[in-house]
Length: 398
Image (cartoon, rainbow, N blue to C red):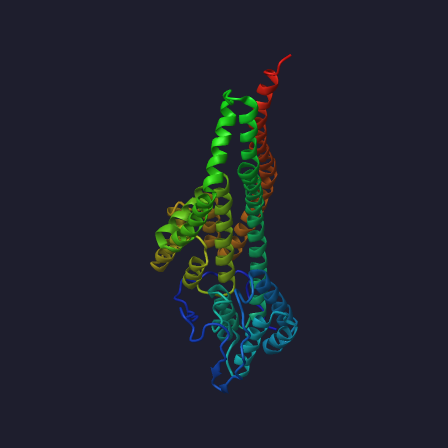
C-alpha cells in the first residue's frame, strides 16, 4: 500500500490543482450517479427528519472506513461492509449510493460531493487529495483523527455551557413557581394578621414582583420566546452573526475559552489539509469556510490574499490581531523549517489541552457559584416571607 514519501512535505503556494467542490452539487443528498459506465441503480430513499447523521456518527464511520482501507480492503468492498452494518436507514442509503457511484466508474470523492449536506468541503477535498496522491488510507486516518479530536473538544465546550444553563433554568422554574403560586397566598395571611400595619420593605418588594408575574406571566413568557426567536433571526443575518461572533470571543471568562477552541480548530484543519497534500491556497479557503466564526474567517481571508501575492502565512496572520503571538511565532518557525503541517498540529494539540484545562477550571468554579446563586434567590424569598411573621410575634400581647 502506498505511503507518503515525507510526513511533512514543503508547503507549496502554487495554484490549487484539485478541482474545487461546486457550491451546489447537481444532486443534493444521496443521488444516484450517472458515470462513464452507465447509470447507477436507483434506490428509493427512506423518509427522514432532521440530520441524516450527526458529527459523532460521521466520525465513527470515518474511523471504521480508515481501518478497513488501511487493512488492505478496497474502498468499494469497505463501503459495502459498512452499509451492511449501518443501523440508520437514511445514512445506510447514502453509503449504498456512494458505492453505486464507484461501481459506475466514479471516484469515492465524487460520491461524497453528491452528498455535500453530510460531507463538508474539508472532508471532500481531503479525500480528493488522497485519491490524487494514491494515499487514501493515510488521508482517511488523518481525517478520522481530526474528526475525533474535533468532536472531543466540541463536547467539552458544550459541557461547560450546558451545566450552568441547566442550573439557571431549574432555579428560574423554582422561583417562578414560588412567586406565582406560593407567595400570593401569604399576601392574604399578612393582611388579616397585621390588620393595617405596614409590611417590611423587602416583603413589599417581593409581593409587588409576585403580583406582576401572576398578572403578566403570559406576557413575560411571550417576551422570552420573542427574544429567543428574534435572536436566532438576527444571528442568521450577516451583521447579527458578526455581532454574536464578536461577543462569543470577547465575553468575560468564556470568551478566552471560545477563542482557544477556534484557534485549535483553525490550526488542526489547516495542518491536516496541508499534510494531506491540499495546496495552501485551497487549504486556506476550506479552513476559512469551516472556521465557525466570522472574525476568524475574515483573518484567514486576509492571509489567503497575502499568500496569493507571494507572502508567507505568519506575518499577515499576526497583522489581523486575532491570533496570539505564540501561534504566529510557531507558524513562522514551521514555515522556515519546512514543517508547517507538523507545527500546526502541535499548536492545535497545545490549545486543545488549554481548552481542556479551562473547561475543568470553569466547571469547578461554576458549580459553587450556581449553588450560591440558587441559595440567595430562594433565601431572599424565605426571609421576605418570614419578616412579617417576626413582626406579628413581636406585637403579640404578653
